[in-house]
Image (cartoon, rainbow, N blue to C red; front, side):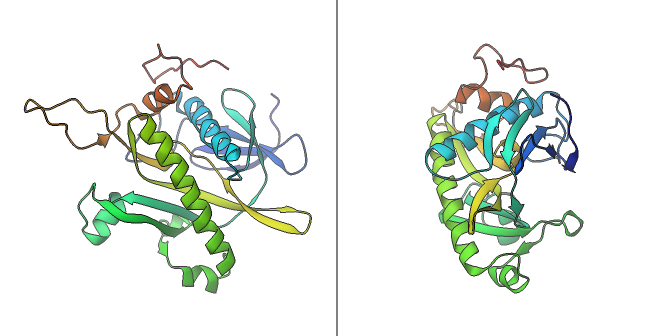
Length: 250
């Protein structure tokens, strides 16, 4: 479709003006910040992330968890609702890994007593520092009611994602989401925004081959995570196994 005015460009996505007031077109790029799951650039990654984020966002909408997702437009673009993004990355941790292991010395892979919700201030120049609720309220990034709603929203997303992943042999160690405000008349509510994809999740493969002694090793990070996740969830044709130039049904 014809390109509209660019509103924002980040590491992994571009936002354009939407066809109607209050909407945006979200375009998925192939490049992103390097993560545990993926290198900085992978050809075809944006196509897969568009499909995967559609799958998760549509699923959340269906169970009553509000998101910005409206519909997928094509291989790389989707129509989303415009929202005022709260300047936080909300991270939900089910297992110790990454920053938690480094910060607290809890062995990687340790199951946490309960899901832990953390907040990181969205400022790349400051390298996304961990912040407490007191910082958030004091600096007016969100009020206490917002924080209560964010925790409730995040835990519902966690329940949904954990169940979906477990059903296809994947352990959801942790994930991050962004939350935005939308207004419907005088009423404000919070919704899940941005994306849900391997770029924002730490996924461990539970389908490990047995060792020679017959035991099964602990879950490991997934190889070729984009293609494998899409294949297991049924959003990629089952005969496609290579992620360099994926072929999807539009």
